[in-house]
Image (tube, rainbow, N blue to C red; front, side, top):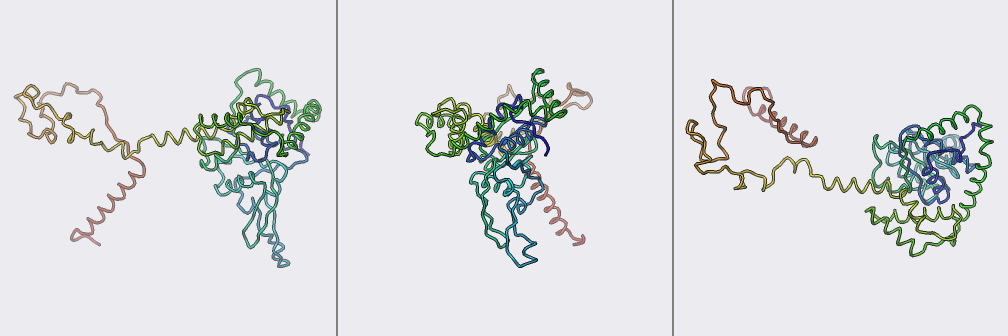
Length: 392
């Protein structure tokens, strides 16, 4: 079997390791979303978590997977050979008890992401398709990665991912060198490297096992009113929508208290898990608010009643004699709005000859431009149809 880089040896990504451990302790958190550039130990940490839960499967969901490949479908071999309606398990069944890793989760179809989040939160996969009705246990730690520059998940799906970690490149030369040296030692001699970290790995695995067992007991570590109030303050300050963030933060704080072996959940536990819970939800709320405040292209290009030069008396030229044009120029029109520019002497160049002239433009939305172009083409076609002597 291919050796796995140990979770206890990962350096510089303490928040990522903490989020993965919390998701493994409390399955109801609904998984972890990891945002960050390439080469920041995303897949390494996911595989290391599965190895820490050993024996546990590590299943990778490819981008090209179909919904039948993920949830399962009718077993065609049994249906064709023996006319038997049987269920063929999918990737969710294979990931039961382990880790389901989805690289570039934002590029998956929304229907598959919706199923993943439902099963990750409930622990049960229910299939009603292809003439079969089947359900089976599917408890796994969902770990998804994404690059925000390639597109975001829909807000409804993004909100259902329990925790989110934003990774960054290591900028400290000493830390960067230590990470590279550790990886090189593992690649050159994985057996010796694993033996070096065997004690830490065994301690972490036992600690995780005890925390999972303790968190499964409903009577362990109840939430106090002070913890509820602290969670409410954190979520209100972040302006999140709904109450899902409150529930996730409470469960994450409890999982952290269990991991630390505490007898009560304290406000500091809430403060530690709040960034993991609110990162993607606060960004989503800020983006929605900015979009609501931004003026639409149509309203930005069309002047309002206060901006219109016809409806605003203050915008009209001063009709007093002092503000009138020179006597050498033709008489201005009585309507200052409809008057054109004054004539000039064509024998002499204007004073600003050769100087760059300012350009004014109005933004037009893409959909508005397409609609205008379509209307112009339809009007031209109708004009040709009415013109005599043209082929129809």
